[in-house]
Image (cartoon, rainbow over all chains, first blue to last red; front, side):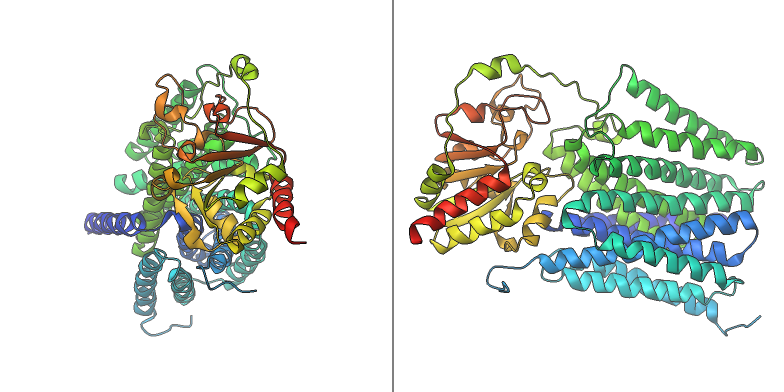
Length: 99
Length: 464
């Protein structure tokens, strides 16, 4: 049963990696910096695991580790989306210039 | 305990939607027109997944979770508001935070499950903490170098790669031992500790100009460690997000290493320690043509087609807003002006594009190397601002040159080349640039920001 779960996970990983390669190859080098900050923010979904770890409160040690993990990941979520959007707002085509 | 009916299903469903939104988010990043929609999709997915998780029955204590979420947000806001020139170090720092989260969770999961950890589980757990720990310290070092808290120049010593790789080999060997005997819990700190040291040593020999490759590589490691964490927690959402991030970092690393003509194995093992052969002796003697801002302005004003090639020097001098004034001034005269961007210009992938976009230069004027290289033969003036090695024709025709084979911007094919540079000092690779001694090349000695400002003033002059 457990082995089957791991195998499923490997399939999921493989498919996601293929999708990633196909989509990211198509992204213009123009946007590579915001791409990196966006994927970094998405990656911070690890916060979900950290929330469960801290919230389960199994013992003091793991709770402390969980809290540190939540703080680190949340700062990536908030900071990552914020700066990606700020960067993308600056990209304007000719003729759409303001002032 | 307060039990919400079917909460487990609700949570799984939010994860499913979040996964779809994350994939769409990357899809929409492909064009500047839809990219902001991509950010929205990512945000909605993230909020859904976090909200869903908070519904979980497993959470018995919300106090610490709430405090940590608030504290993380308080730290995140200033990190999201940094100045655009600080984006490379901010990015490195965020890789460090991501890796820290993964390492913490991995460590906790080990001690919660030990001593009875199934082999496959122990293997991915080891991968998670090894990658996480080395990415954490490696990214902190990279951020320190980019912020210039640490020296930017590479520090190398004999046998460096052997020392580093042996360390990593020890960590891997201990991890294998743990997979076979997970009950030997005292070994676990070793597979966290050694990679922490390895991360530092890995970045020590790396110089500033190699940062685009290194940041991409650390990005990839951060993603892979998160995916490994997904295996440990059996979270498909995390596996997918990690795989996407890992793939993205991987593609960027390959792009960057190609743009520097480095082999990919060279990148994978972080062996960037280059021997820096500086033979300044022959460089001194050769004559160059130099020009004043007035002369440069006259030449630019007479041109029909101008290509500006920016490099890290423009970022250091904060010259992008002056460059924008130059762009406006020349555009007003009906001169066709474009920008040629080398993939490794700056300190991270796409660095120059962000700085120029910040200065309000339309993105359709920012062209990749492959596109702009076809246009140099019809270009009247190529203006190089703070770029060096990426314009060095030696990469094309001198087989003995250390950068031979590296793809460059063919500025030497333009009718006139103007180079704004502080002095004749060689660039990162420590090699002389034959471009500067061409008859068609004019050296404009000075600070990039001040010199571009002077040119703009000269261009405006006759109308006053």
